[in-house]
Length: 151
Length: 75
Image (cartoon, rainbow over all chains, first blue to last red):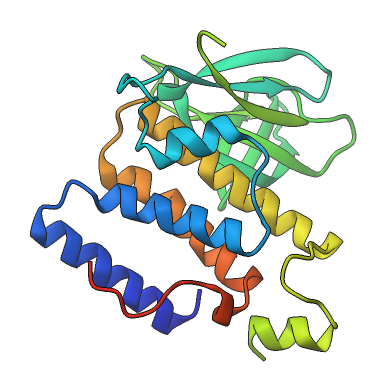
């Protein structure tokens, strides 16, 4: 985003905050989805779009429980609770410190929950922080998807 | 050169997704996934907005400015 556009966005965000509007998030979501749709850059997952557009609620007003399905480089599937996710990283650089594999995220070393792809110096991973864990950990993935409970 | 200019230079019209756009689109999708999961986890609004703004940063580079509805609407 250009600096001017970023400035406009920040001003809008601040204005919405000052007004105490409950629709700040909805407006942002609408904005993102509108831009995606107009540019024919739509994401495929209609469920995701519906949930985002409704600010996290489904048609009946309930907040569906979402999880991230992570398919590892070895093909193993794991479901990650929404509250554990800290971020999705596309380029994690892997190093071995002798005690195991470390992934570097923005220069910050984080332990890997599972080994990265064999021979890979960099690969995608999700950053997770489990309840009771002081530190974030990395889970390498080959593919990720949103999973809505009950479907 | 602006994103639109770059697209013109490549002879690309709106609605065409180039292979070179794939990484950017994947990034946008990742940020939307983050936002959805933060929503589901009941994170504060600002936390949810963060990945959305990052997604918009990427969208800005993909969508020609004239095709975006980003006029001077008031919040």
